[in-house]
Length: 456
Image (cartoon, rainbow, N blue to C red):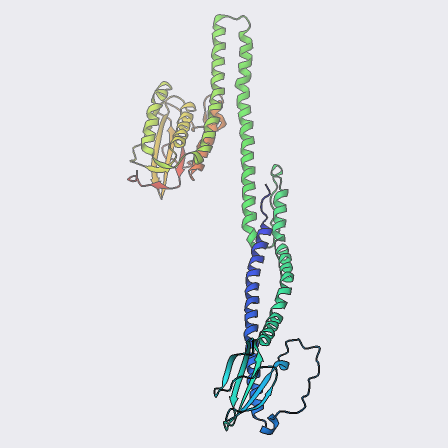
């Protein structure tokens, strides 16, 4: 299905508005022409009557010989001068003179404009009658109404006709103006269509109109965001491939070794290595799945109040046995109720990643504490660790630089990527605190707005 064109849409609206306004002007001009022609005719009748009254009475007597007018081809057939009729009465109502085609009207003492029906069959006439100063003569000048209407129509048409002829020309000029005015938009559309996201091309701000600045900026922002996302995906894919390559290669070697005869103790060790490598690969895949869920949560779930202190206590209780088995301690600082508006499952997933990284990358005797708090309109959730009595320095959660063990799947930072994504979903940020007194390292997940603890 063909999509509508903005140019055509704009042109149709512009032409529609033009036709409406232009048509209104033509109608007004026609009505004005009719009105002005009627006033012109009435004024001419009154002027003719006044002129006749200023003549001497002898000049108003009928002549034995009438003079015909010279034909004027340039005048239209409705030339009102040829249709004027004149009737003159004396003070007693006796007819003095009657000239013209109009039937003789009945005498009346009244004067002024009147519409008369004269002749058989009756024909409409427009008349003006007036007495002289001495009230001794009355003059009536008549004009056929049809002649007057023809004249009025002709004048009105002469006024409106140029508008009708100019309308197509103006419409064409308007169409060209719309097309020319939209050329910058066409160029911008062509530039956008030529963009190649794979080549990281940006839209050049060469368009001279400020209305396009926000469009160009928004498109470039989207392109930059897309390129940044593609770069992150490539880096993540490279890291995942690197981490999966080691356990998968080890699995292949151990599986091949298990096919050969070996001592029972060697066989058991090989099975343990197979299990360990399979768990490593499975954990990497689990982290990737968690990262995907964190990315979808913003659209899939509605925000709701989340009690951070209760969440911290529940997660700490679940990992208490794992901490005991590793010779570590885990606890929660009691800072009171802290409530934020967000997605419960991603926040819990982020906290679990921080706790798991702390447990996996710190030696026995390390003290791990989950802390919550709020200040300056923001709320935060953090995991800190420090060396316990009789142990060395603790390691940073999720940072392989301080891990006393061999590099593992978590050293990728996949867990921290998940936490950072959760912070992004909640319009917050994730960071390692540079200054954490009494603690070896602290990783904080901050939320942009803290909800009132009483609003639950």
